[in-house]
Image (cartoon, rainbow, N blue to C red; front, side, top):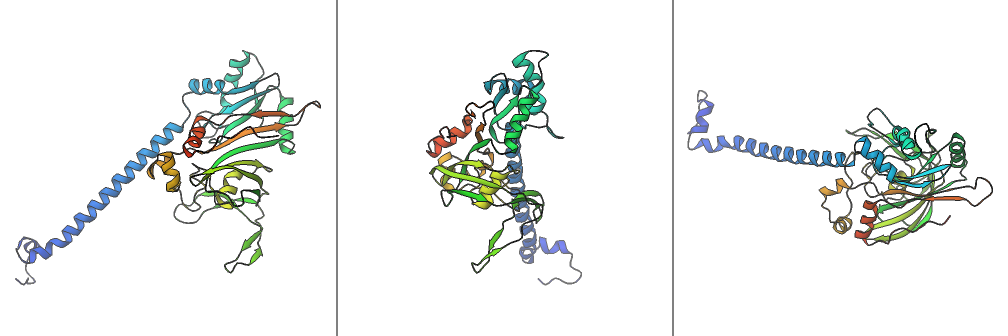
Length: 340
């Protein structure tokens, strides 16, 4: 049946012949609606999963965190207090930070030494998701001594990092300046990035580049302590102290991002890290489950120069349980105490 100019559109859908053709747009619309609904459900599931991870990573209520911080006191002497900082607790506060080590210091001081004691003082900082050695001082003089040693580089820090991939060579020095830049694309955000002195052109020629004026010198010594299933355990000794230095040097300088480092596993995207299948299988995780991985970066040791001509002070902290559990699953021997 041919449709005349006056034939109502709904007649084509109701007719037994032309109606079949007339239903095609509706079928396509239904199929598209179904795909949209599936995508929406998947996104909703990912958002719920990510929210659960964020909630799990948040510090508990003040009382619980204070007790946890007290339980993590490794060294307690007349001058220095050593804390094995737990994961997810920031050292300093901020607009969106409910609590931090700094905000808990008055209560921790009272818990350790009683009312009226001089408040403990922070000597340095660690990133929120980095665990390990955090030094507090009982006096301003002791705090300034530690800060001076760190500033003058007479103090030595040792970190343990569990990374994706194996660095080549297995041991060496990364000497690449670091600068903060805004990424391009629809998800614009700021990250620390490399500002190398030399670059390799497309034809393989080494050319000297221009280091950004705002870039800071950044030097990291590294050594591979173990490897398995496409992952490696690295001992890191930073010579300088640039923001996110270890994460940037490993991810962008060595192509070995730290396990659980969702920020520096990509450059222009805000997306969860995607570990290789060998690592996921060893950890018993699905690709979607990788978003729950915590940052495996641990400040293992700080060596301070002797205060009065004695032997250097070596302060050590063991990695947290999740770090050790990951090592066991990957069958990588746990780290041993670093030499000083």
